[in-house]
Image 1 (cartoon, rainbow, N blue to C red):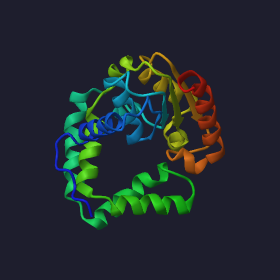
Image 2: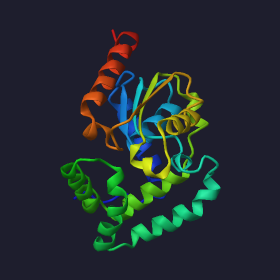
Image 3: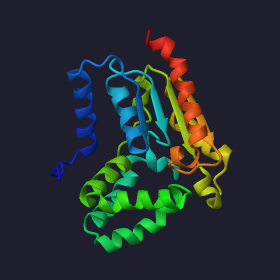
Image 4: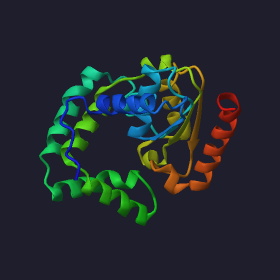
Length: 223
């Protein structure tokens, strides 16, 4: 029931609102945990306010999303396609949105009930906002900006959804490693069983990694 934010800088608005929340509530180096777009925002916050936040736990997110498919991609080369996709999504009917979901839902998770849940989220979301967020996610490149991050970063990545397209554990790890190469203290772990919603497909492994991350950083950052 809350009106949508009308802005050409939706993700930047979210970033700045979260930074404001941390400052207003005087949070002391809070740990940031983000999945997908949330992981991107966590990296961005940590890059622009490196002394404000604590360690990052990033779940299947990258500093520059288009480079996962084309490592040579740049913001300028991606903009025309991203703008076209944004405009198409903004004007899509509910039926068109439902049809387009069938293309990517299979890459999200393996469990039918989780796919139904994720699909429902998509249909209930505000299409123009989703379109704008996706456009910005495609056209903001943080690969150099993340060099400013001075806290430990743990990254969980998934790849098996693209196995039929020739992606391997090794090629996915190289892509993740290349994108995070400027982060001073980064640990990258790939799952060989889960798709994008790692916490749904392999919760045991996910929480093992989370527990390890928390226990490793607790003594260093929190007394």
